[in-house]
Length: 251
Image 1 (cartoon, one colour):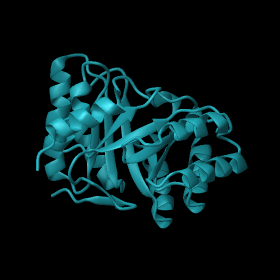
Image 2: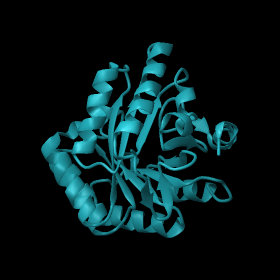
Image 3: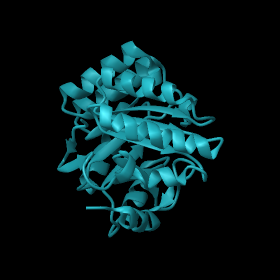
Image 4: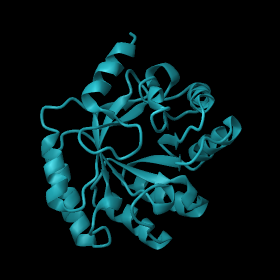
């Protein structure tokens, strides 16, 4: 049975899906302006997409930025480097990726980090270990912006993530047909009952919007909403997301 993952009092895998607001900014000023625009809004956590940050390779600037961001937030902070091959802005080498996760973890600059499963077992294992040594939770993630693989393929990816030590297991896929969306929902429901860790799943684009609001029913513990600029296709505006989650909520 799926267990709850707790981060700063936020319990993933229990109740409504937690709502995450992504920040996609190029520099400190833009990022801080986005955070200030979140004031008085209802959400659960923030994701900083560090691959958008122009100084991603400058250790001092990354530390300074993340300290500023954390100081502004009372909620958990997820820091995500999304590689070029998985729809991100920049491609780091394995050494740079490992160093970034180490920098963030050792300096306690995030409550959660996203690590891409497709980085390879050795690198993923190293990064997960580094994060866990500093009590930073890990979202292991797999993205396909072109298609939705077979039911069995998605199952294998989620099982692989659990073996490698992910605290939260994330899959985001692009549907080509309505049946693809149902496949993703079915996998989510089945695997949320089989795996020990909470899942985050979504079918992207317009066709997959339903998957972003049905998590409480199917077993996806987190969803992403946008305030101004979406970080992935199909993201719902925050105000609409909160209304929709409340509409499908069940006690």
